Image 1: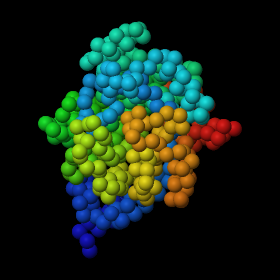
Image 2: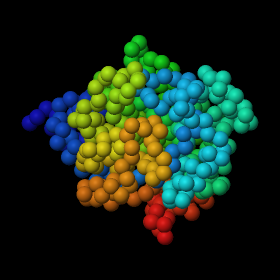
Image 3: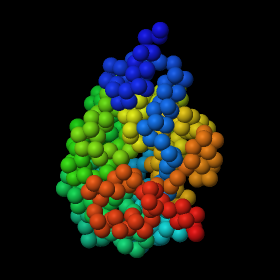
Image 4: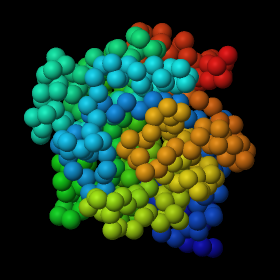
Length: 390
């Protein structure tokens, strides 16, 4: 019997029983086909039903950022023609376009605390009557919610518990990527050398604070940025353990690193496809009952393989706006993703930016539930007649 076989059988028979050593053994020794097959079987048992996606608009509120990540093209500098500093009229226009395209999510994305580094950001916020990016997000979330009915989801980097509490009244969910649990990647020449907010301790503190506030959170890891296999495994277990404490990690995203021009890691190799699919399958085996997501636009030629490897969500796909974080990788059409999903024997359904299981238990307010109920059916997914424009 192969050395890993007993561990894989246990992962199938007792979902969630793997420890770090077990997971490391599977990642290093298990044949990819066996790992993928097991992950798909566990997904079918623990997360049966449709593969979901969120129909969204991407509101790129401000892309100045105090951090500099070695792989990032999202951050812009003052004077850059792609600099985004949206006023309320522009925000509302994007959201209204999303409403007309039958979207349900308004994804607010910003750089990390740009007002701490750039006078331009301070002056821009002051001209809008605010002193912080979080204050402005709160106002824009309220505007979009009231005027369009789209449900805000904010990803503004690391946030304090007080800041998240401030946004909770308008956001059905929030997000912050852990990316990695490895502090080693903060070192000289590493991916996060110039990004203090990417210190795992800072990110974990944000996720812990969200758990204390009962906020449904999106998090995940970035695979191939210099982590070791052992560090990848540890990152998955850190997320698993955070969820076990507070039950509020609503989805786990896995993204593969792709080098981009004019970045510090432009000369690095892409994440090997085989390594990434093994990481995806391992995530399902480590966290059998979680919502596991891989964005289809980062793997346009092979994204169907990730259904085999145990995912149950495609993340946000927009019929209106580009992926401002990865503009080099356009989203495939929703119809093409649906076709691929069906080829894999699965139905695809639109979901809200808050998953059905978080519509109870006090994770969102009664006020936000009223907006949710206008868009959702009895399963907590988006009404088919809304998606189809009926």
